Figure (cartoon, rainbow, N blue to C red):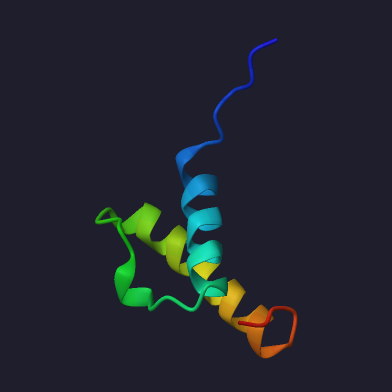
Length: 58
């Protein structure tokens, strides 16, 4: 059975989360489209919040 690719929005959120956990700046967002960019930034914000709550360490 073939696995379907995750949709673009979910992928952008996941990549933003990974960027936030690794400590990258939100200015490094690779997306230009407003919808996808907002998903990436949402993931980035979630990661920053998780880091401040102590869930991740650098």
